[in-house]
Image (cartoon, rainbow, N blue to C red; front, side, top):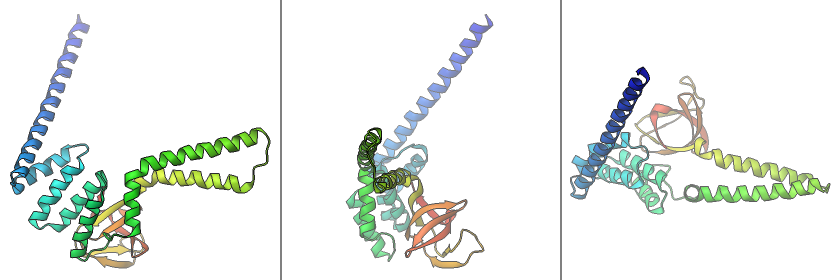
Length: 245
């Protein structure tokens, strides 16, 4: 009897929590539709807070979502948030159109990090085709490994340079797989930000830069992020930079 009573309580609680979750999801969807409707009717400033509230709730906002926010911020004259949301859109769906827009805004404000150089086009290529590239390299690596294994099984001579090549190749694949976790881009979020030679508040100040500049972020240490600035590895406080993830 007590077991049946307990089952009924569990069923009721499960049903109640599920209903709440569904109601919340439907409410969020309705709110987002309202924001889209306001945006389409050119009521940008009314749509802005609704989009921003939904950004915190959505697990994986689309590129179009961030492009709308970027457009609103540009209309408000907030170039910093425009750059940030354009970068978020680019992260979700890399495109040359967004890359050109970033370069246009960066050039107009004399900012570094938005140049149309080989490195940024390489990053564009990697973001667009990284899955295919890694899969191709994995297949090729497995093929090379099988060939060497057959040679070993048949007791054929394997030159040392082939073994070294395979090791370097596998390390390269490992680097590509770990790159998304180690490499990010970030935007300086206020003026007078110090870049230091070491990850410490007492370290020498190497540079002082203003908001809007985009830096490549590679790893870090606690509250410090390692960045590349003018071809040098320097450190910046995590709170001074918006990471684009």
